[in-house]
Length: 258
Image (cartoon, rainbow, N blue to C red):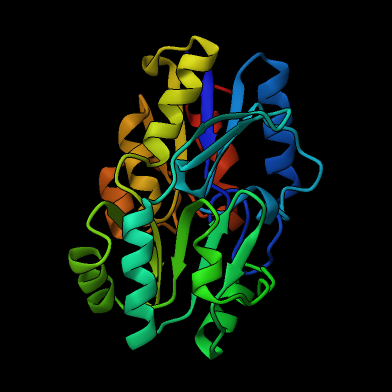
């Protein structure tokens, strides 16, 4: 019996093309909650960036890929920051070899600078460009995630030499989410399952991107969207239709949850 379902946002609940949810998806989420099934968001977005869920209510939010988790009332139930040592190394490295980066803090997001690629990628997910601030000032805050606009080669160099206590995942060739190694969407799942007293064998998760693989593997039933990356589909127990072709509803009906 499924008691908890975890949904990614971009490419799963919400179409990249329209930046909207299908009405059928909204109705499905409402019906799940009416049946007593807990529904959760699991996203790389921050709390302040969840601008495309309309008025839907969820039982909890795994944000920043598990680095910052809050319940439906906004109470923080888990958080993991990037170490001061890593951030200081990063600041020094950026002085010599800068790249555009969003620094995710509890109070809001900041950037060192923006280029055309950052602007383009943030337009894809309908997000504004955060305020600019010197890196030395930004890292005085607690940082829960870095949104790094770079290719995979630079990412590997950064994780090896500058941020060895971090991991990265990506859904775009020139963008990576960087988080502390000890957190992921799967660890966020575990935190909420403990919070609500739900066993992992009663869970389902939906996703489409690289940062969804951990929770798709962790859930009793992991569902990949039809528009998902091949690696996500390979990790899933079931592949449904695309986000724009009612993939959420079709999977929920297949597993007799609707």
